[in-house]
View 1: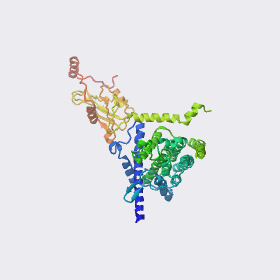
View 2 (view 1 turned 90 degrees about the vertical axis):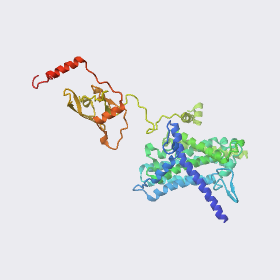
View 3 (view 1 turned 180 degrees about the vertical axis):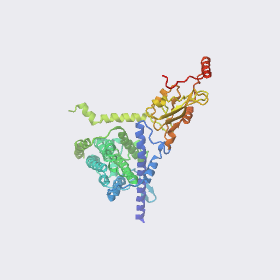
View 4 (view 1 turned 120 degrees about the horizontal axis):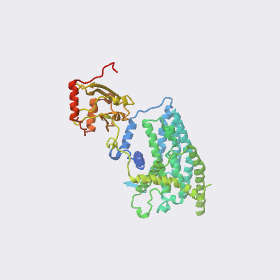
Length: 338
Length: 184
């Protein structure tokens, strides 16, 4: 009976988190279109619902009813598996993100603000993020199309390259918090914004943000789906629901990397001042995430796309040495101080 | 070599920050330069060259005299004029058939310039999309209807002075002169 209740609670949490994340994904596409259009002096979606608010629903319905096309010569099994391989790692990372401070107590049942508090939380997310690259590469290869293949290869090269500085940038906060658990990491940053790790790790934060943008294939690093040269990159041949899975994964990844950035550098659900703690922690967490997501869109409206050799040079000659030096200095200082 | 200032600018991404400031300013400005088209029609400037229409005089008679100069001026050969004598006034001519094929028309306005009696005009009709191409082959009647809609103010029909009318009546009584074939 006890186990049944526990499983029920966990399932409830999963439904809650998954529902929340998918809703955010849907409205992130809307927010992106609206913010972009505002920055470009346009109106954006205005037709479906007031101010186009129902546009994500309409888009979803349209994609759902589209014909599912598998190109001839495509490897059917891998072609069908690739979107799932991309989507699952993007969503599974949310299992360890602590969204708030307080547990919800209903009788003897305790609903925690995170699904699981893994003591290797960061490693877990990074490991699954790497699997996502497989999905992109296999999806591009299985489509039997040159554009998709090139997009997939580019994406694989980019993801693998940028994962190194991404991981190394997270070493700083890990060393400071002395834990890989996202919950412990958040708690280590309590007591005002000057305790947040961005204050002592600004370089790591910048490196993390740049690598996160590259990881999620967003502008200015969206070479895997550069329309002008590759049609749509690795999902050129995908349509209907399969395409929307890739789309979901991309936006899910955006939210996930923002979650990690907030937890590792911006103090998670902590309030910036102690007198602001009357605002619920989850509101702070969401506010920080919204700011980072807005920053992503803002950047997309601003910068043009890089060339591929510039992208690689930037990663291996600038980001990686910087991240290494940052990790080294952090470790030495931490060793001397304690 | 990177100088101190240049290095600092590179480190803090100063160029990207400038760009970010610009886009943010545009977002806050809230000015919209696009139109919600089917709901919000564009304000067309005067001199807009839309569909070509026929005009009438203030007494309701059509201006066209069937001279076919528009047909000659048309670069895309979309106008066909078949001229005929007016049954009541054999010395005056009208266009018996006037066909303007809008699918060929390039809206250059040459026909409007060529017309000696200002019978043609370019309207502001621009929503010409249709499911039936035959609707785009305009006849004189449909062009007159369009003209009535876009040009409600009509020109006065010229009135000839008494002297001219007398001359004309005299000629009519004596029989109109006509060129003999074979006499240079």
